[in-house]
Length: 82
Image 1 (cartoon, rainbow, N blue to C red):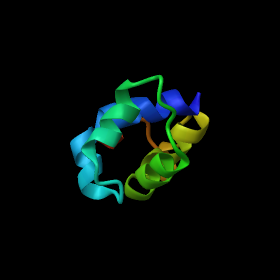
Image 2 (image 1 turned 45 degrees about the vertical axis):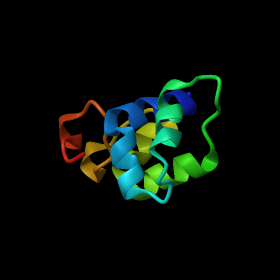
Image 3 (image 1 turned 90 degrees about the vertical axis):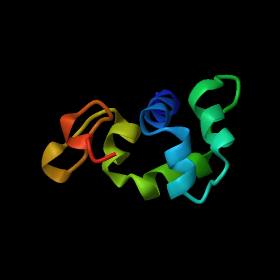
Image 4 (image 1 turned 120 degrees about the vertical axis):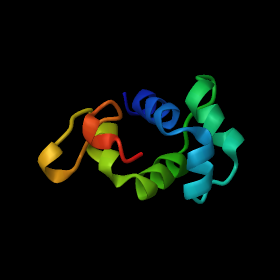
């Protein structure tokens, strides 16, 4: 499910880092996305995360990777640039 992968990715990157590099500057919003399953992630959350970290797009939307095209999952060694 996309929303669960989004939550996983936010936890991987970190709320503070996302607040620093996206247009959503409220660290608390990112923390809520990561941990509060009662609150739905917004389209804006997804868009901002992918603007800042496009290498996760395929994994986030489809659940797969394509290392040759630079599309990684949060636990891939290739994602160590986070």
